[in-house]
Amino acid sequence: MLSVASIAGFAGALDLSMLFVAYPAISDAFPATPPALLSWVVTIYSLVLASLLIPSGRLADRLGRRRMFLVGTAVFGFGALASGLAPGPVWLIAARAGQAVGGALILPASMGVLLSEFPASRRGTAIGTWGGVGGIATVAGPAIGSALLAAGGWRWVLLVNVPLAAVAFFGGARVFRESVDADARVGDLAGSAILMVAVAAMALSITQGPERGWTDPVVLEAAFVAVLAAAALVRRSSRQDDPVLDLDLLADPLFRASNLVAFTFSTAFFAMFFGLVVFATEVWDAPHSRAGLYVIPAQVTAATLSFAGGKLADRVGHRRVMVPGALSFAAGSLLLLVGVGGRDTFGTWVVALVLMGAGIGTVFPSFQSGAVHAVASTKFGIAAATTQTNSRIAGTLGVAVAVALVGGATTGDPADFDLLWLFLAGLAVVSAIASWRVDTRATTPGRAPAIP
Image (cartoon, rainbow, N blue to C red; front, side, top):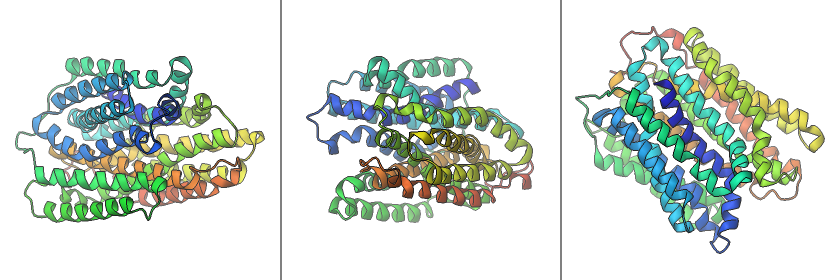
């Protein structure tokens, strides 16, 4: 059961991280397409996924987590197939949007299945494994994408998710048991629509800002719409019996602290990826098909620690795992700042990425399990979806900030990346401070949940 859910999570997380490496090859394949349009190949997936995660969590709770998992894997697989066979950029963007709908259904449904099957004393292990596999996929994506690019081109990068989705679909059909909240309702559909507008407008403003300029009317108008929609959503959610955004979750201090970590650490995480690949290509002149290989030290370290991180959090509490992990990430970022320059500093680069990988492997799975530690089983789906949405929105922001800081770094000067490394270190320190509040030792497994 855990392996099937992890395969689905692996496929979803792998997709976006691989695309960072494949994007230059896609751009070369459609030279007549304006960059502003082609950038939606990457943007549309994050935008749709972030917009639909919370409504998908509601659907999983109401209609059945197993059912939504199977629907999601099928939609995701067909979307990947359509993307890989796309004859042109518009078809490719549309197929990516459809694939993101499947991804949005998979994430909360798979986590909800696991949370309903595992007792409180083992949920940290289960979610740590599930989240750790997703973290490994994100870290490994650039390296896997580089290998697929070298072997068969950018279409292989997109088509690799088809067999993964098939394995997850048939595995889920065989081993998952249905779990549903019989009293749950589909929820506030108008609130869902407002949420989609808020997230989509914010993502549009963030991703288009570096290209158009932050004072461009489109960017400013999108940001204004996002703020208005978010305010309307909070007001509506406070007055609904079954809101799409469950404000009662914020009454749980573990949920609040874990989601602050999810936001700050995910922002740093995705910004790190963009920055490392650009550094390798612009400072060390690595070809695009090999740039992803430079993140292997972080990949191996995260893979080694992520599975043990969940078990350790169950044993000693999340705080004792997350605080050292976030500080390790900060130390690696500062080492990039002070110790990495020309190719002769590659050894220092490896040490820095090992430190950052240690943070990824411990913090990423832990904030996901910490967020639902005191949540009732009937709200697993919405709690998981809220945390995932938070993380995805933060990732979009992280990439946008990285683009703004180093997207134009073409001089080959390592100093062009100093602000980015400082940005990563600062976010990691904030994550460590917030992690201090994720003290799960103060709760007793199996007790009545804080959020009924």
